[in-house]
Amino acid sequence: LYLKDTFMPVRQKILPGTINLESIKNIPLFFGLSEAEKESLYKEANIYFYPKKEILYRQGDPITRFYLICNGAVKLCHETGEGHEVTNYIRTAGDTMNATAAFSPAGGVHGSNAITVKDSIILDYSIEWLKKIVQQYSSITGNLLSDLSARAQNLELEIKNQNYMSSQQLLACFLTRACVVEGLNPKAFKLPYNKALIASRLRMTQETLSRTLPRLKEFGITVETKNFKFNDLQSLERNLCRHCPGAERCRARQVIQKTLPKDEAITTLCSVS
Amino acid sequence: LYLKDTFMPVRQKILPGTINLESIKNIPLFFGLSEAEKESLYKEANIYFYPKKEILYRQGDPITRFYLICNGAVKLCHETGEGHEVTNYIRTAGDTMNATAAFSPAGGVHGSNAITVKDSIILDYSIEWLKKIVQQYSSITGNLLSDLSARAQNLELEIKNQNYMSSQQLLACFLTRACVVEGLNPKAFKLPYNKALIASRLRMTQETLSRTLPRLKEFGITVETKNFKFNDLQSLERNLCRHCPGAERCRARQVIQKTLPKDEAITTLCSVS
DNA sequence: CGATCGTTTGATCCGCATCAAGATAGGTGG
DNA sequence: CCACCTATCTTGATGCGGATCAAACGATCG
Image (cartoon, rainbow over all chains, first blue to last red; front, side, top):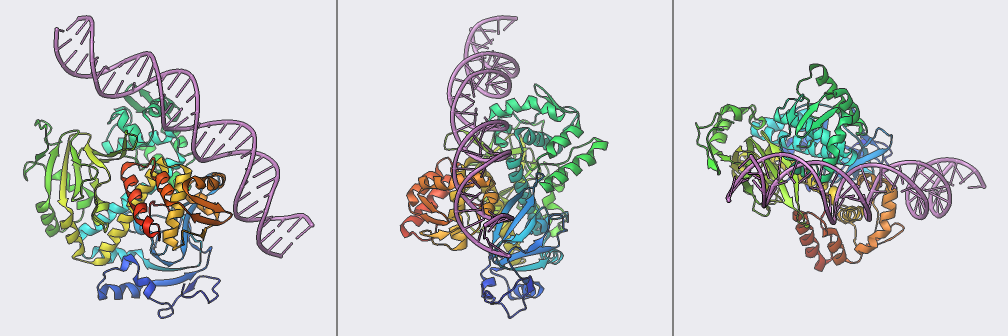
């Protein structure tokens, strides 16, 4: 850390020249850039020093900046419904933050808090600016970035779901999503895949899936041999959202409630498909 | 499906004009493209019809093509060490396959099999060609794609690990990786974070972490208060790799064995950080 | 010195995996 | 049409890993 002798109790802007730029040059994101690109990237960047335990942003804040950690470490965490803290990731030097959010179509808000766990030096850009840079050249590139972002966001959601949802909830999510993806009628549909495949996809055994199916009745889903029926979306919402971590709970709740009155397609709650 | 009346028992090339291109135009990847881009993308694409249960590629095959599903569904699956099949994802219309592999630095081989679970129409491109297209415009874009790809690949690995590894294995992975990321000496180091943070990151309770620490001795890792020591990498390798799904097992094994003789940095086994 | 934080230990419980066996359905050939 | 077979699915009994609740322990600090 190039500034470790200086006492910095609070977030503090670092002016060009104050910091040794060599450390930045070793960051993968800047590999192989043309001089022009480097120039514009350096000019547009904010560089800040953050002491340990400083909050970069809070869950629920609108997403506006793209971060790049030069030095130190940041935890991404959120509060669960039950009140205790869950850390999703620890990001360290060279890692980016908000890359997925930057290129996903919807603007949205942060799903977690970002807090330094060590003294850190972090660089940030306006997302608007970054998006413009990327898309001015080729739109297939922008689309690929969106695709990868969506993929990564789904994976993050899936990790949370796998950890904090019961087999009932996972299965209900899967069925819900299947309706959307496959364009099925929630009032009466047949399984699009055989049960072995679904169990395998949900990372549970066939036996567990088999035992879980009848217990979906508690969630307002009736099952008879291969015929499924969502008949109580309110109950589904109540049960799916219970125990979900903060951001997801809200998202699921909103989504179901929004689709309730129209009672048409049930939108995506869950990453599993 | 535009060709459903035709009987096609095997993979079969579809010539331009045979298929209704409207369905392709609704795919997000092609949104907002310039005419020139569209032109070159359509020209370069292979379009194939695949019947149900057709194998697109096998685990271990070199990665050469980027796929885009127009219609149908594909499962990505692999065999576990114990012999039964695990499905990682089910990809459906509009999803891409190998996007992450296409933009990660190393070429590499497929970590899973891809098999259609319905009759499908799938489009594919050479990865080389796609890479060239993307990088001819701006290298920051290429770097962003690499960053997102790496992120997504780590998330996939994390999902598998969370599901198939014991708390001992997860913790050992975390410590191994911490040595690499933080540049610690495997022969003697202190925890870079406090235990509450680590437990939270590993999605286990503090109590479990506490009980797991002494049991790391079985893996050749000794723990005294806050001092850690890897003293038997062979044992670590044996225990970490046991129960891992195919691709990861091999990767972990190779990585440890490669670092064994030199006994320097232990390379990344696990996505958790 | 008590107070708070970080950590450990013990007792208990619950969900899912595992192993094993039975049930149902779909398809084939006689 | 029935007997047979295999694939698919269900049910039961048991065990294990980690969560939960509760309490004790140790360290650091005012």
